[in-house]
Length: 279
Image (cartoon, rainbow, N blue to C red; front, top):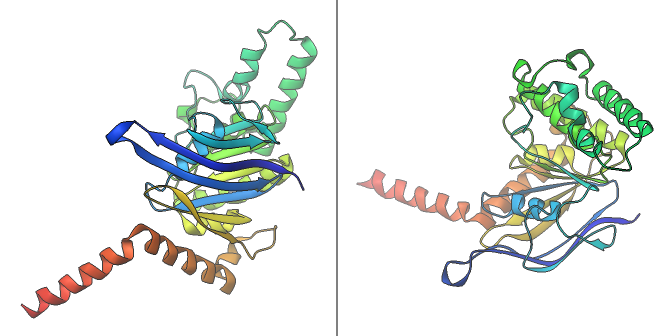
C-alpha cells in the first residue's frame, strides 16, 4: 500500500517575535492510500490547523507535506475539503452546487462537449449515492442540515479527489442524523476509494469512523498517541457497545484529560470543594 499523505517535521507558527504562537510542532504523520484516519484532541491542539495545512489553505513554516510523494504547494485538485458550515451557494440548486467547480472549468480552452457530458454523469451518480436525487432542483434553504452536508460532500467528491479532508463536518447535526451520516460517509469513502482525514472533538465518532485515531496534544499542537481501531472495516452502530470499543474510548478520553491539563483542573476543583465543605 502506498502513502497518500505524509507530514515530516511540520511546524506552523502564527505571528512573529514575542507574540508568535506555535500551532503545530514537529508533526510526523503518514496516511496510507484508502485509509480513514481521524484526528482528536482538546480544543487548541491544532487539529483543524493541521488539516488546513494539508489542504494547502495554510502554509507551514518548516518541514514537508507530500501527497503521493510530491510536496504540496497550496491547494490541489487531488485534495478536497468539507467544512462544518456547509458553504453552499444559496442561489444555486442542489445539482448546480455540486457541478459548480466543473462549471468554472468549462471556460478553459481545452474543454470539450465530452467533458461536459462526463461531468453531468458524475453529478447524477453522486446525487444517487448521496440520496439527493429527489431534491436535485431544491435550494439549500429548503433542506435540512444533514441534507445540506450531503450536498457539500457530493460537491467535494465531484472532481474525484484522492484525499477527502473533513473538518468536524457533522458537528452541527443532531445525534440521530449524525449516525446516518457516519454510515453514509463510510459507504461513500469505500465506494470512491478515497483517503479520508477527519477532524472531530467527539471520541466516539473518531473510533467509529477511523481505522486509526490520532490524538493530538495542545500547547503546542503535536501528535501524542496513535491508536489502531480494533474493529472490522464493515461497521455497525451496535459496535459502540462492544468491550473493545468502550475500552478504547475510555483510554483516549483519559489521555485527552491528561495532555490538556483537564485532570489537574478537576483535582483542584475537588480539593477546593472539600475545603469549602469543611468551612
